[in-house]
Structure formats: structure tokens, C-alpha cells
Image 1 (cartoon, helix red, strand yellow):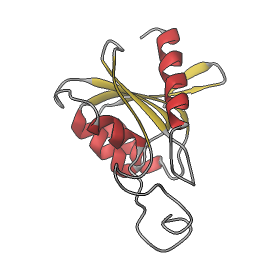
Image 2 (cartoon, helix red, strand yellow):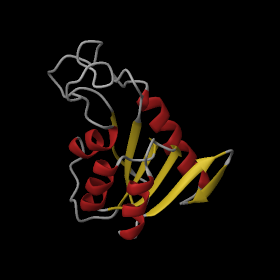
Image 3 (tube, helix red, strand yellow):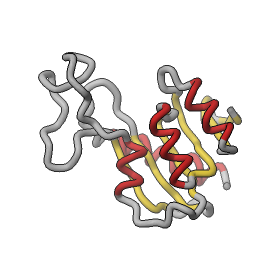
Image 4 (cartoon, one colour):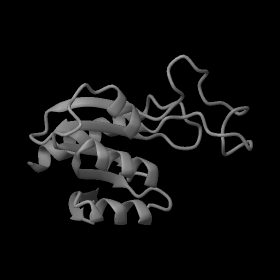
Amino acid sequence: MKLEKIKFNLELAKMISKRSTCLRLSVGAVLTDIKGIILSVGYNGSPSGLPHCNKTNCLDLIPKPCRALHAEINSIIHSSVDFRLPKIMFLTHSPCFSCAKILIAFGVKELYFLERYRDDLRSIKLLKEAKVKIHQYKNGSIKAI
């Protein structure tokens, strides 16, 4: 895929992340087909119909389960594509372990991200084991992980 298209989709993920309702971290996701055609976008936040994250229901602030769906999951939920078709995911942050498992099961074959998510070593290892190509865009260049 051309660098301009990669940069565009990562910038779009950044813009989408501004819709996040999470208090701790704003994450955006762009799901494309293997040619780079956008299939869906997502950001992290409470499921539709539930109150947004706030100081009384945030996992980092009180000992209750976090209500937010991750951006990757939202982009998958809002897509209507066959899970068997190969896809590319563009993220503001590398995926957590749970999202990595779902991305693999959903047929994501390539992943681009801007920032490393905390404790992502297990998820990176799992994605590599599944032969997902992983790239970080940093300082104007793409680095394979």
C-alpha cells in the first residue's frame, strides 16, 4: 500500500479518536479491505444507549468493570464484511491482547498504528504468531514490528 494512503488512514484514525468518550485514552480505528478501501471506523467508548464514561463508572477511577468498547471492536461491529476476507486495521494505538485475538479471528492480515499501547508485548507476539504484518508509523517513516 502506498505511504500516502497509510498516512491518510492513520490521520483518519486520529480524527475518529476525538469522538472517544473514554476518560483515560482516546483511540481511533479504521478498517479497510486489502486494497485500502475504507470499510468502517470506530472509537472507544460506552456501548450505544449507555451513559458515557464518567468519574463514577470509569474502571481507572473506581473498582468496577470498564464499560467502554475498544475502537477495534466498534469498527468490527459497524462493518458488514465477511470475517473470512483479508483486512487491514489502522489504529492510533497498538491493540490490547483481547483485541489482538479478535482482529486475528476477524481476518485482519496487516496492522498499522501510531503509538504503543501499555503492555502490548503479548498482543504483538500473538499477532506475529498469526502472521499478521505489524507496522508502526513514527517520525515520518514506517517500521515493521
